[in-house]
Length: 600
Image 1 (tube, rainbow, N blue to C red):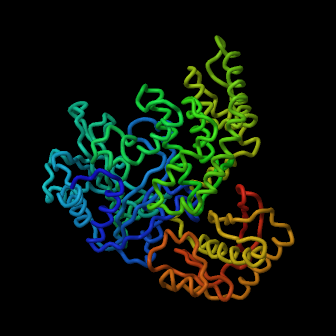
Image 2 (cartoon, rainbow, N blue to C red):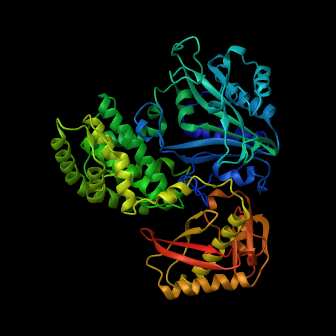
Image 3 (cartoon, rainbow, N blue to C red):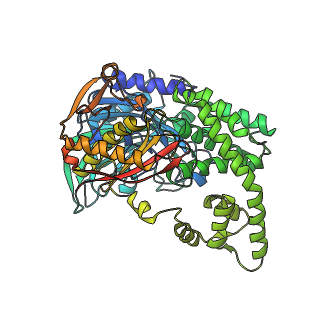
C-alpha cells in the first residue's frame, strides 16, 4: 500500500490490530497521573502499567491505541533529521493473552503485506536479546522471525542495553524485546555493523517488548505470572521512512508548520544549515508546547517540574525565532497552524485554543522583555573573560537565570556557540540555595512510580478522591473545581486543581474536616465497570475522559465520592486512618496545589 500521509498510517495501524481482535482505546493525557518518576508520558506503555501489572482493563486483554509522548532528554539533538521532543506512538498490547509468536507474526504481516505497509522484506532487519548471566538468549523470538521468512544475516543478537525493557523502578516487570529496523542506503560502517551502531545504516521503526520476568529486590529475575506484550511504533519516523523523506521535518507532520515559519520570517527552509536548524527547533518546540498546554491536564510555564520544561521549550523557540527575524507574537500564529493540523486527532487542542494562545503570548512577552537585557549581560560576562578563562561561573549563570530569566540550557547553548563552557554544577548549587529546585524532590522522582502499587500508595490514591470531593463541596460555589494533576509517592499526595485564588485557612480546615469525616465513616470502596454514559448518569466525575474506552471503572466511596479511575485503591475509607493538609500553594496561573499526608 502506498502511504503518503500520517493520518493514513494512524488509521491503518488501528484497523490492522482491530482486525486481530484488539479494542481501540483512546490515548491518555501527556501528563502522567500519580507517577513521581517522570514529568511526561514518555512511552505508549506508560498509562497502561497498572494493567500490565495485573489489573483488569475494562476493554479486555487485547488493546491498541495512539499515544501522545514527550521526551526532552535529547533536546540538544533537535534540529537534526530525526529527533523530536513530541511524538506519537502507535501501540498494541496483550495483557496476559497472546505472546511472542503472535506478536512477531503480526508485526511481520503489518510491515510487509501489500495490504498493509508493503515494505520490501529485504529492507528490514531485526534485533533480539543476546542473553547474559541473568536471562537466556532469546532464541524463541529469533526462531519466529526465521519462520516468517527473515534471512539469518538480518537478525542481530544484542545485549541488554539494546534489547531489554524495564523495570520502571528498581524492581518489577521486565523482559527482552525485539526491534525492527529499516536498512537504509548507507554502506555498512565496518564488518561488525549492526543496529547497535550509530552510523545510520539501520533506522528503528518498531519495538515488541515481551514482559516475562519480575525483577526481585535481590537482583534476580523470576518468571512473571502474567506475560504481556507491549509494542511501540513511532509515527514520525515511520511515515518518514514510508514516504522516502530525508528527515521527519520533510513529512506532512511539519510541512504546514514550516511553511508558516517561512512566511513569518521571510526566509526559505533549507537555504543554509543554520536557518534550517533554527526553523526545525521552532517547529518542534512550538508543536510540543502547544500539545502540553492544550492537554486536558495542561500546565502553564513556571520554574518547576512540567512548567519548567514548557518554559524552556517556549523560550528556546523564541530565541531561535528571533534569530530568524520573526516578529513578536509569532508563537500564537504558529500554534494556530498546529491546532488546525491536529484538530481531528486531538480535539482537546480546539477546546483549549484560547488558553494555549494566551499562555504562549504571555510567556513570549516575558521572555522578549528579558532576553535583550540578558543578552547584553551575557556579552558583558564573556567579554570580561576573553583571554582569562573559557568557563562561565555558576554564579554568573545563576544571575542570568534569576535576574534575566535565562534557563541554564540557553546559557549553555549560547556559551557553546562562543566557544565557552558553563560551570553547571556551580549553577545547580546556587539553584538549590534559592530553593528553585529541591534535591530531595529530584531524588524522589526516580523512586517507585507507576510500578509502585503498594498499599500505602493505594491509600493515598483514594485520599485524592476524597480531597477532590471535599474541595468541590467547599469551593464549588465560587468556581468549578477540576483536577489538573496528581502526584503520589509512598509518603504523601500532591493534588493540583483549577481555582482562581488562594484557598484561605478556614476553607482548608473545612476541606480537611470533610475528608476526615469520610474516613471516619469507614465506607467500603466499591469498584464497578460500566459505560461512560452510565457513569455520567450516576453522577460520576469523569476526569480526562479522552483516555477512557467504552467501558470504565467507577470507584464509589459511600455517599461522598464517585469517580472514573483506573486505580489502585484501598478497600475501605477507614484504612486511611486520618488526613492532614501540609501545604496549599500556587502551581501555575489559575491552578492551586495541595500537599497532604494520611495516618500511618
